[in-house]
Figure 1 (spheres, one colour):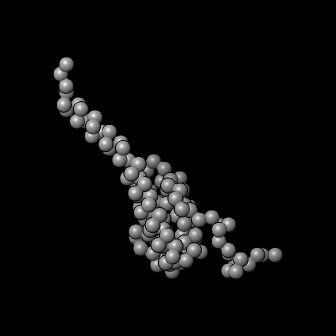
Figure 2: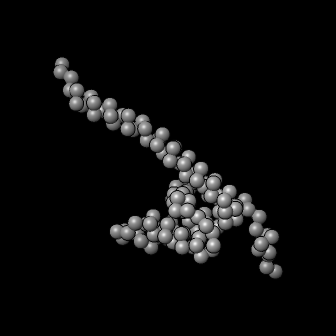
Figure 3: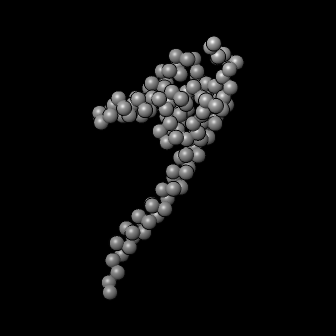
Amino acid sequence: MELDLNAVLINLVLAVLVAAIPVVVATARALVQQQLERLKLEIGERNYWLLQSFARDFVAAAEQTLGEANIDKKIYAVRMLTDLASDLGIAVTPEQIDALIEAAVHGLNTATLGAIELQAEFPAVE
């Protein structure tokens, strides 16, 4: 029985690549989470929640609006969120905007309204 060394090597490389996928995904997720935590500390929890909410909305809008168009949806969402942050006077870096968009796309570390006390700034309307 003859051993096909090329086939063995190809299968070995494929097995290593498949085994490495969870490690790469976990590392990328940890880096995004780290960037988000740093952003939350820098701009405050309320501004972080606001930008995180808009990031989710812009990602959803890009998916719905652009659909099958040959336009990069992530670039569209990044541009919209960057412009909004600038208009609101919130200083963020391109890396932080990218982390917010990635978190919105993959559902990472998304803030919830119940976690933040807004009553002081936005009193109830009677």
